[in-house]
Image (cartoon, rainbow, N blue to C red; front, side):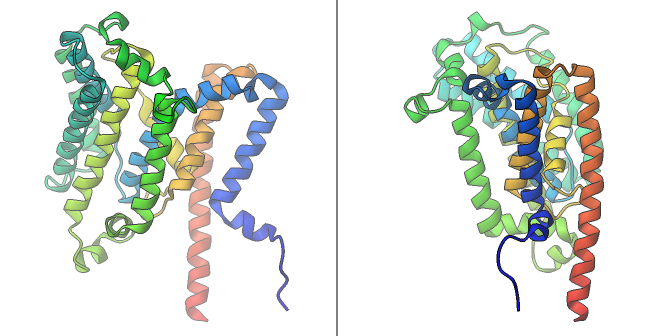
Length: 334
């Protein structure tokens, strides 16, 4: 007779549930060491400062799910953000929405070009994005003539977007609200739409997906376009949040975004990953970045800890995948 009730084995077999437990334990530990961590002001600052990371993790998840990678996102953010900032500097009457649309359009275009090079040019994604990382960073400096856009040169309406709450009529910060909307959209898109299923199909088995009639190249270009779109959005949000645009902004952000995805259970070989897992992974990166300095952990140790967590997460992903494959094989034999 089957027993009903709480099943600890079932809980630990779920990657998202296990990660949620680990995240709660981590938060409790930091709060025990420094109660400032759980104050409303600090939590709000943490979510505002890492909202951009959470948004970018959605795009990186899609890229990793199809079995590719993108290490050019920091440069795409800088190029698109600088484009919007220069428009605001030279045309002070530009509406905030128009500046955001310009950044999104520039980022999307960059993503599509990268996708075409990878899909049509058959260039390995890490090589292609490594090249574009340097190309776009160089173009950012050339576009700005090696200068930076200061706070007084950005319109007040644009700067106030990152600090305002008017999208929710004073309830939550605009950045947090945008991140929430992005997660709702991507959850539905990847789980319930035909296009979302195609993305997983390409990552799981590209040859089988092609035989079934899926245009693999089209899916790859689309995914990199999505990544570029989110980078463009993030570029505008970055300029709004920090009230300035510099050529080196968002440098090195790629590692944190990839780490968030890996921690959240996204497979580096493609075909696996969930929006919920990515959210938990991004929250883990946010908690580490915000909480560890509060308990006296230096930035150098923080980077080392992130690296260690990535290695552990990758190993855990491999072990869990092998376990799942064995279970599936046993079920087929039965």
